[in-house]
Structure formats: structure tokens, C-alpha cells
Image 1 (cartoon, rainbow, N blue to C red):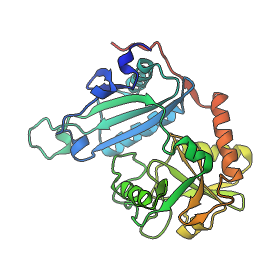
Image 2: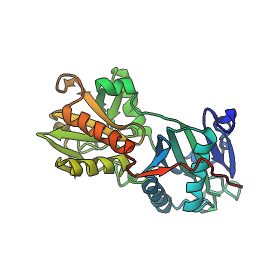
Image 3: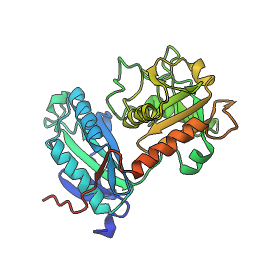
Length: 305
């Protein structure tokens, strides 16, 4: 490790690399006051970024849709991510890239175009959205009464910090002593959960929602793995009743990979443990990682002047 001050993480803010505790924003930044931010997260496994190009591409699309453009181009952003990981010395890491609207150049301006957009990046020790011990027994998922914000209001394909509906779902789940939550839209169709896509298994077929959800990179990976394994999989409209009647359920996220579910609301799935197809996809997912699937080695010797 280059410097013990980076042991808990390394950040890049306003053109400087700093220990994660010093990676801070002014309270007047619209990224803070308005959640006017887009972001993406990529993980590092055994010294390699997983699907880095896909994450960078999605980040670029998110920035374009929200008209946020920091000074750094895609190549510079990639180099910064490598440097953040290199500073920590981590071989397994959670790595974020964030583009904030910033502060208005003109004091008191209410025009987004007047703001100075800027890039934030950071690398932290590995994070799982569902702890590994919970994954082992299968997570317990609560179906929230809070509906997902409509796609017409907040584009779910743009990875953003608008999490009020997702957080309300989490509060409900934790009040009921469940691990996490999943939300339906106002028409009762399944969408996603806080930080993950969800998959429903019925009669050996896999389905994942076609609305209210991010085009997840891990979701994309799962669909590819299903094709490789000869498992029928589709993106489709999924009514709540289909979730409640599923044979198996699992979730997928950059922060944790494929994670089986053993309970949905009051319903216990299978034998209250991860289902066989979910467990198989989880094993294949991590084996493919070990084989170097979609891996980009971290450039631990990266130096940025």
C-alpha cells in the first residue's frame, strides 16, 4: 500500500487524490442540495475491474442525458479509477464515479447551465448490498407499499441519487425485520430494489422487470450466463402476483453479484434456503470472474500528475 492514510479508501475531488475521509463537497453543491448527480459503480475482483468498459459507457450515457459534463473525458476518468484503487492497494474493491452538477458560477442562479460540473471518484474496500452471511441463508425481501417513482418522472436507466422511494421501502423492510425491499410501480408491476435488480424463477425460466429499473451491468451478465447455461431468460412485465408465486427469486448487483432470496414477504421459498437455479447462477458468476471474464487488470503503477 502506498500510504496507510488510504487504507480506508481513496477519493478524487476537485482534481486531487485524497484519503476518503477528506473527499468532501461544499454544502452549496447541487449534488448535495438537490441530489443533482449521476453516478456509476464498478467492482474490482482479485485485482481486475469487472466490465469496466460497460460501466464507463453507462456513466457517459447518464451524464449526457442529465447534461452534466465534468472536464475529464472518458479516458481520464478511467485513469482516475485505476489510480484510486492503486492508492488503496486493494485487490477487491467497490469503485464509484460520480458527476455532480456543482455550484453555480453566478451567485444565486437557479439555472443548471450556470453550474460548474465536476467529477468525484473513490475506491473503498469491497461492499455487498446483502451481507455474505445473509446471502448464504438467502435474503428475506419485503414488498414495499411505497410505489417506485414513475419512469416518466425520473428515468431509471440514468443511475442517480434519487432514492427517497427506495429508502422508504428499506424503512418498511427493516421495521418488519426483513433484510431489504423491492418496489412495484403504481400499476402493481415489479421494478427493483435499493441498489439491485430482481429476478423471478418459475418452472425453470428466469424473468426480470422491463420497467422502473436500471439497466444493470450485473443484470446483463446474468442474462448472458443464462444463455450460456441454456436457461430461458427474458426481460418482461412482472405482476406482483408472479413474484409472490415464484419458485425462486434472486437479486443482482455490482455490490454482491448474484444473491439468492429465501423469503418474499410472509412466503418461504423452497426449504427456506437458496434455490438450486439461483445457487447455480451465483456459482457460475463467480467462477467466470476467477476465469478472467470481462476483466481489466488494475494498473497499480498508474501515476497521474
